[in-house]
Image (cartoon, rainbow over all chains, first blue to last red; front, side):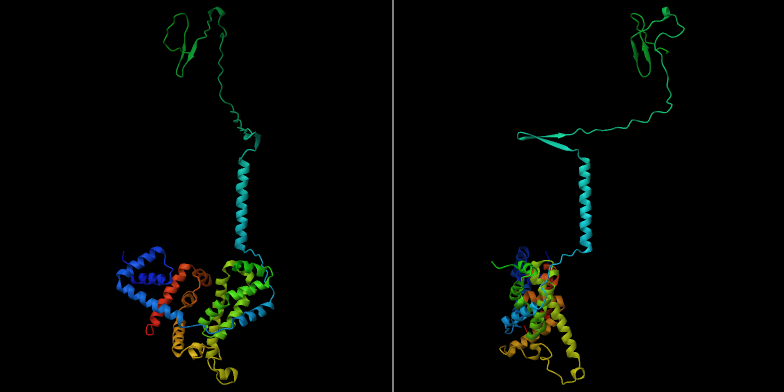
Length: 191
Length: 193
């Protein structure tokens, strides 16, 4: 993979600082082993680093006197007290979160039937109360057309002329009536 | 076992002033060093460090993460130092005779850089003074973030995380600022390396 000069310099910078990750360290070591230009950049950065670290040494400072001065000045000030302030954003987030939790809990409580548990030895039996399902009755059919069918002796027919049968077979398209012994009449009846 | 920064901050907030002294002891060297590298003057650096600690003390209750005290303090130190530098520049640009009715003062007494004026610690050799002056000049040409990243991370060897907290950026951004600053310094100082 081709690595740009800028990328090599950035890798070298991290390599010198010891902040490159393992993968980058391996990459830059490979580049330094094969690329003389990269080695030259590495040498320049190392030299610069040494210069930067040594060029402005700290002068002698009376540290005890300085800390005593700071301590004396701080003693004149009130001790800071932690105030717990809630920003509007934090406050509104908390309220929204509480509302959401309340809704979720409400839905769960509402949808679950109450349960009672009975301890039986080591086992726990859970009694679920029966769930009653109410289905509303359909509205009454208003003035539905009805046809009354009378089964029995037709009016105006003499009892002697009337024969009832208990072998009525119905089908969607026709009604078959068997009448008389050994009757195998396949013709659909007209009534 | 030594108390952590977070524990010391909590103790101060609970009213224990002595814990603040422990924080001063822990960070005063770092604070003066960072300020000194920004201002080039040890007296100014100590003054700024004192102000920074007092500011930190009075606003300690606003510190969100007590464990990040070090980075937070360095942010205060660098902000105060940069402000101090700007005001010093303005002071130096003013014609002192007109402004105060007295003769011009030396750069040192006006709070200038010890390196630039050659008034650095007498133990430093002429060569080291020149090196310091060159580096200070070059650092002054960098953008603030790059300069602070070089000073805190490369010169002061502060942990990257603390530098990131001080600069209010990510650790990756610190690496980038150090690299960009280093690249510019290499160009600016190429004749002296």
